Length: 488
Ligand code: UN1
Image 1 (tube, rainbow, N blue to C red):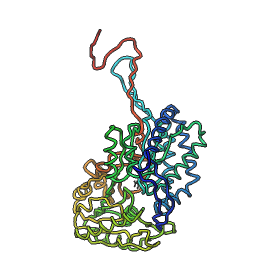
Image 2 (image 1 turned 30 degrees about the vertical axis):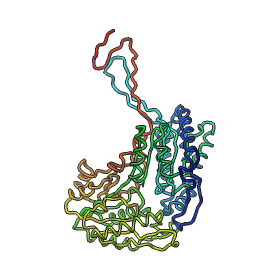
Image 3 (image 1 turned 135 degrees about the horizontal axis):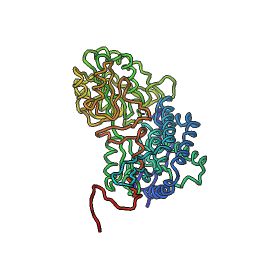
Image 4 (image 1 turned 45 degrees about the horizontal axis):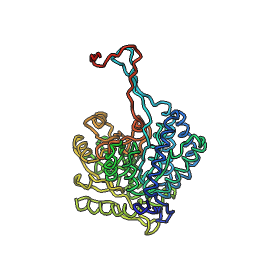
């Protein structure tokens, strides 16, 4: 087989200035097939390694990441365009999940269950699942892989990573850190093919999702990508863990602390240049405070430091590429047609024509139109107004996505209503803190077209293992459940 079906090379360009960083050879269909085979063989060995020993590999990975935090963070800045502290923050997120996974490697607890039969014991045990395919997006080019890989590895699975074709170098660098950890662990103890990276586009992701040897495909990215992956995965009914599009909303109630609200809105809406799945896209403001809040936001937006992400003080770096910029332009034009009043949103020349910097846009909308319900991966914040909390919650829920949400209020009843079953319908619901920038300790993901999967903390590890219900009869008779008699 030849490479013709797939891309031959992947070109990595820096969004900072459009400079060519490097060309990376894409994997061919045959090479991917080989890597899946190796992952399947590695799994057969790795599943027998005691989980705390598997945890030692992940502990060493965390050590290497601590040593290389600066360098890897700088590469995230160079290839994904994140400001320095966010690039470093992403590596910190990797370190945090390694620490979490190491502890977990001694806590893969199952249940003991009271059997209804005498002299029987009934337990639930968690076993390794199989090779896990991990598909990630450009906006978290290192951390999201670590959320998945650290858990999968301690759970006894092998991993194959298909990173975004926009950030192949970050993926290569992360693989080097894993190799270093493996050398310290004792290379002979790490089965060949335990972790691998596949460079390629959507076809490569599709091949992984469709291959029967892959037990779980964990995909983070757009809803469109997730639907394609789910369709491939459905052919073998394999498990999926989907963390897809968001359209986060923040409700600003009349009692909100406005200083805190302004700061939270700015970080959530313009941080990472509006390119997080948790980015705040809809600000739902009570009519009594909308004028005051919008005035303060307009002032804050006008003075946001947009610029080269490597420069100290910059808060808004570049968009990932020209397509992202065009999508933002198109959305702002549509917002004007829908009766929106747009503040900001213009292109800013920082490093010449080959890079795409923008002033984040604040858009006052007369209503939640279809445009507002659509996720555009750029710093556009739509402002909507409300009269009653019920109306605000109805607006919050009236989108296809369900990832993250927040309310700013000092009214306990409102906060509790927002957190209740009739409140936010998202996987993440916050009070007096913004919808983005979650810690790794909680389960991360959301409902509806966000895909329903949960990555990272809490009991998300269970997605990477298979549950077995085990019954042992240590008696000398054979009683049947439900009192059934079947004497032969
Ligand atoms: C994503 O954008 O895909 O909560 C993940 C946050 C980050 C993760 C975002 N910890 O914003």
